[in-house]
Every structure is written in C-alpha cells, then in structure tokens.
Image 1: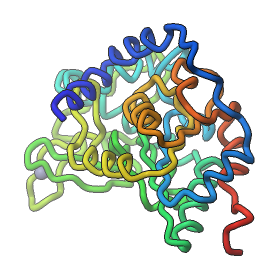
Image 2: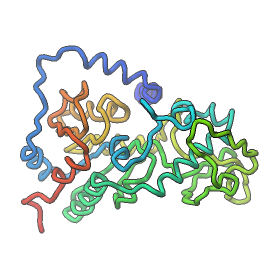
Image 3: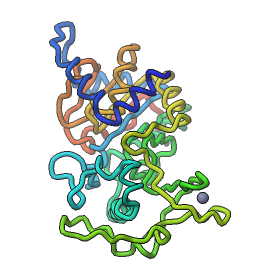
Length: 307
Ligand SMILES: [Zn+2]
C-alpha cells in the first residue's frame, strides 16, 4: 500500500511513466499482438458481470476540451504542470484561479461525445441485467456524468468542486462566473496581463460563515490522491472481469497503474486509443482509432442481452 502511494506520487510527476516505458521497450518475444477481433471482444463483453472502464484525456479531447499539456498546449505562456501545483497557487492564487475559471467557462461550450454516451448507455442497460459498469477517470471535466454515467470515480477531482483552505469543506460549484471579480478574466492569449485579483475577492468559502479562500478540488502535481477514492478504485479493479482502457496511452497514469495489474491477473483488457503504446502488447485486445468511433459498436447491445 505504501509502495503504491509512493508510485502514485511519483507518477503524478511523470517519472514512473518514463521508467515503465523503458522497461516495456525491451523486446518481448513471448508477446503476440493484441487482437482487434471485435466479435471475440463482444463475446467476452457479453458474459462480463463487472466492467471497469479507465478513461483519459483522449476521451475529452474528442469533445474539444483543451488539456494544456504537450505540444501547443498552452494557457498564456504556461502549461498545466506550471499552474496545477500547490506552489503556483500559494505564489499567485489569482493567476491560478484565472486559469481554472477559464477552464470552467470553456466547459459550458463543450458536450459529451459518442464515447461518453456509449459508456453511459452501456452502464444503464447493463444495470438492469444486474451487471455493473464503473468509470475510473483522470478527467476533471465531468463529461461522463453529463453523459449520464452514475458510477464514476474521478480520481483527479473535478473542475466544478471547490475545497476551503481554512475549514476543508468541499462543495460542488457550477456558478458562472465563480465569483464577480473573475468575470471576463482568464483569457488564454499569451499577451494577456495577470488580473491580480486581491485574495479577498477570489472565491471564498460559504460554509457556516467561514469565508476562507477556496481552491479547485482537483489533484495537483505533487499531491496524493484521495485515499477513499483510491480504495474504491482498488475494489473495482479487484472484482472486475473485464477492463477497458479508453483514450489514454497505457503507459500514462492512471491506466499505467491499474490496467497492467489487471492484465497480469488474467483479466482481459481492451485498449481503445489512437496508436500503439509499449503497454499495448500486454493486453488482449486493441482497437485503434478515435474512441467516439470504436467504442459505440463495442459496447452496443449484444444479441444475447434481453431487448
Ligand atoms: Zn471554509
């Protein structure tokens, strides 16, 4: 457990990924290519009682949600890893709030895509058959919930939750703008000046007259995951009989943490993403392409299911 916690911390900083990457790059003659036989996947899917679906940035990207990571992924002159840290927030809470305000407002213009909808529809349909679908997502945009998914573990929190730095109270918050001082702020253009909002005009706690400074309830770089959510993820992964990895390379956290373990335990793992990853070879299935295209036919009603 302790080792796992350390790995979680390290992997938030990206070190674990590169190490795993190197390890998996070694030639593995015992491995055969994963199957892309949809009928074979569908046969296993039709018998699965508990399905874990791990989703990542690729699913959000197909809805046009910016991630501020990788080539071209900038807000002003920064990337997510520069601003999504406790240090950045304590140095300049106004700037970090501008960044998150912008991301919240952008979400008002984005919608769940066919991959989100296929997952939600599958969960609802299978629940009527006494079968369970759980989404484990690193995405903080709530698009799975908006698509109708109910069993969602948001391991990195949500753009639409806040946590008070004084009393610790967490609350959902869908206000637009989140506070008056942020109205019209947060423009992503690199020449935009910092709004330099006084800290007492940033979002403040409304719980029992506390008035403490709020922060986004998301897991920042260098922070540990919520242990209650982690425990739930472990329960889901321990009891699932089919695992899907969607829109994330399986060497990138969190899929890197959970999916290879499941595969090693003999659970069939199916990867839905745009390209091969070094972890691909350890999985039973791989379906290449946009997940909005590959996922709906994979999760559609099987002929053995009731009408
Ligand atoms: Zn408070």
